Amino acid sequence: MSDLDVQVPTAFDPFADANAEDSGAGAKEYVHIRVQQRNGRKSLTTVQGLKKEFSYNKILKDLKKEFCCNGTVVQDPELGQVIQLQGDQRKNVSTFLVQGF
Image (cartoon, rainbow, N blue to C red; front, side, top):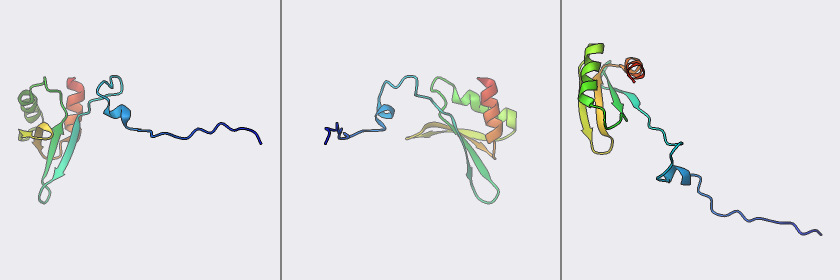
């Protein structure tokens, strides 16, 4: 019989890189644009994940003027500031944010 080098697997954490504080190049900040169904045909579009240095009120003012809808900025304890707009404005908001930045 020949001697085989057998390596016993050790504990491997696949999420160790995601939990690291200094994950520089791999860390991306996403802007989440979601739609929530209210009652009947009514819906609500939420935008979260914008950077802190942006003025949410100025962005909201431009969104409301551009899409002829009403909206508000809500302070959520877990998510931070969230922009809410009336109606399904997902495509409009995404094109507005891509063109604006």
